[in-house]
Length: 602
Image (cartoon, rainbow, N blue to C red; front, side):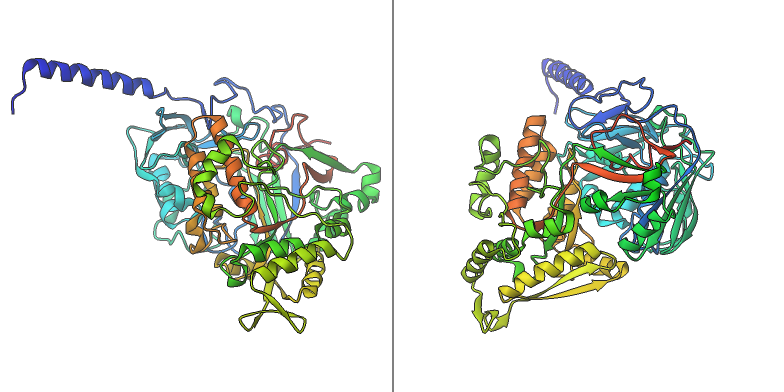
């Protein structure tokens, strides 16, 4: 069909205008990208603000870890790979500054580009980027890594990969990813995928656990790996990226060693004996009264306290709601009341650290404990009929009287259990002819957790509940938790100042049945998923904060975890030769701090 000339000209003008608008919507390639606003550091920055650009090279740090390993690929579900490989051997296209909530700067990529709606992202590789064997990092390596991780890697990669429409190379040294789902975090998430050398995996099953040392691009290489005993990483003298501004003052220790122990107590004794030269202390009471040793008195061991401003996250006993006994929120609420927190905290830590009030406590993202208001309430009200009690009206954890008996809270617990259909019969709680029994799963070497469970089990017995405590080694623990074969277990989820796609892995519907997710509690909440989706698509910091506070309410009032305590400092004892900068990042002692910006100097 022919069109009048005036219509053709008009269409041409409209098309040109749309192309112009499209060009304006596309930002120029940048040195970094922030979740909101612009990166804090300019293109010509010298180093990260919490790194010492003049730090000398040399020295070694020796850590202790409880457990062991039997694999060296930390990016698949099978096997147990040590954290150090993931942190120090692999690199990604972008890397995070831990002094900003969520900002990434170029690493393997020299620039990043996206459109105003973040429907796509394009990375330009640094031509000098090299694997540890000296071979160049190619576009083919990058695309293969993304596709393989998305289809064969650990389940944590699956959720984001489902949102990828295509991954292509629009030109030499360029990788472009187009998305099929609105999600403003995706350009950042995709910038953090580890990059593998494709050729190393020719003819091999990527998803199969093995002790093959991966060829990657990071500042350290695997020097020795003795399964379940030790791992030694050595600084690569030919590391391609050592002179980049993002790396100045980082990764300067010659050696990072991890020694593995079956028991945390034995590990602490090894530190006191000098076998380890850095030790993170999680017990405030022990920090206060168990470091009066000659090395500390002489100054050979330094006790450092590192402040932070990150959320509390959640640490405690998690209910597996897949187990019928824990499907009812009233039962979970009863068992939270029965947990004598004040008494347990006093006996275990001297009560020095405060209790975790909510998942995002200690931060601007935390819920208030009164009624939901304003934007938070508006986000939650469409789900009011299915929300747990307290989500809209207000909720706070029960407080005991500090005595061993905890009578008031046990009375409340008994009433909740009766309301849920559990009746005492000859000293045992019964429902439909079945006694109330469940198992608490523990990992070997967790002496403090064992002590906590012992106190808790005694209180539950007074309610007529029988508890079986099962202690297993790290390999069995991983196998059972991967398939959610437990009733209750100790559980930790660290949370950042910029929560995003990982929240679906933690709390999303897929994790109810998908093995290896981090949704140990088996929660299936449309409200939680809606809040996460709102977070991912928020275009302002205020909307993002409101959605996160709403999510915090859904999680906390769901009564999925019996929270323990947290600290707004990290406690690190270390030899005096190990130093860290005066400027502490907002995340404190977190990923990217020790050993990354520490150095050795007599």
